[in-house]
Image (cartoon, rainbow, N blue to C red; front, side, top):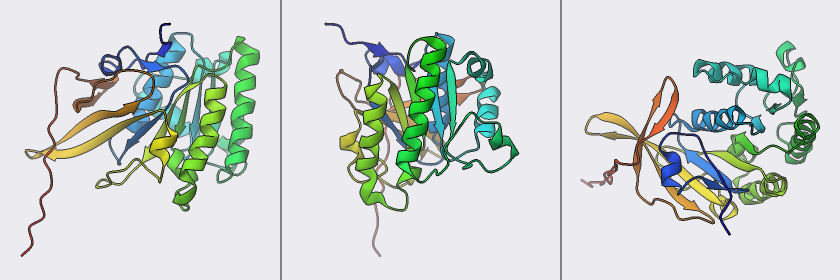
Length: 256
């Protein structure tokens, strides 16, 4: 039986994934500041909307108005899809505070409460089903780390709770995961085991210039490329170069 896949729509990425992400997989998009996690997530959502696949985007670190403006800067205007009932922006940032927040359809009253977030996510999924006749195909949480930043010991449980909801509705999702520049992990104890896939994004200084690169650490249910590849952020979004490989240098500490 052929694997059902969801194409990322990011040039070069699907080649590394043997055609796309297996359906229902929850993928951690892990990386430090400036690596392009949010842009890649927004590109993933918008590609789906253009191809008739409804989506939800949970913003926990930016105002939803700012997210829409950032998307428009790349030519990805989500507003027409919201008006059609194909796309739901879930405001997990403002807590309903402010005039702009009052105009949002889906607002998480307590962004620190995971169960409150899940209730609003389910509400948004039902709204899309009512308008399109099917549940969302794609989802993003940006960033999931916000939910357990002050209590990392519960990271795995939170990811599992959210994974059950997204996978249960057949949604293939990116969970953005924040890590520090020097951190080797993926954003919280045990989250690598809870997620179906991990794509690690990095920004390194190589020969005097900053180079963005990514590596697919794991992807359940499919064969995938296991090399590190460069990517760029252009005025049309992210482009991955599957025919090029980046070799990162190990840092060597010299004791005096």
